[in-house]
Amino acid sequence: MEDPSNDNTPKGGFVFIIIGKAYQEGDDEGTDIHIMLRAPDDDTAVRDALNALTEEGFSEADLDQIGTLMGAPDEEPHASAYQGALEGEVAIIRFG
Image 1 (cartoon, rainbow, N blue to C red):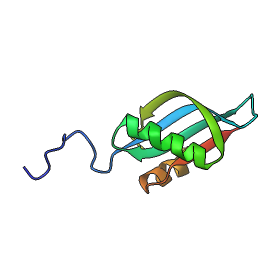
Image 2 (image 1 turned 60 degrees about the vertical axis):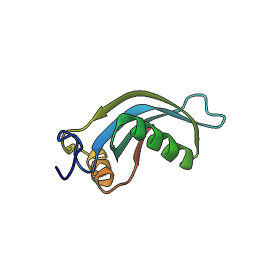
Image 3 (image 1 turned 120 degrees about the vertical axis):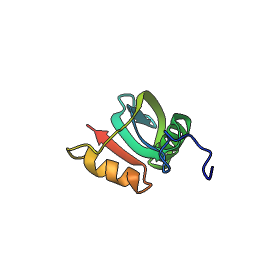
Image 4 (image 1 turned 45 degrees about the vertical axis):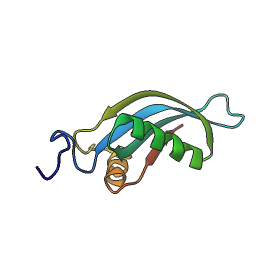
């Protein structure tokens, strides 16, 4: 057996979507966010998402939901974010 990993796990990892709210220093209301990224598991996805939010200047985040996408979304901005995730980017979609 060349690759002993689980056959159900895609070789490049899953494309995750994480939904939550992120806060910048002194911001009480926060910004609704969707984060799309590729990762081998949900723990790695959450860690990478939090690192990306920190790089974007957010100091706190409430991550409410996480799931995997089984195909490309049809509508923007999620379609572009999905493509970026396939290419290894962490895409942060901000609302409001």
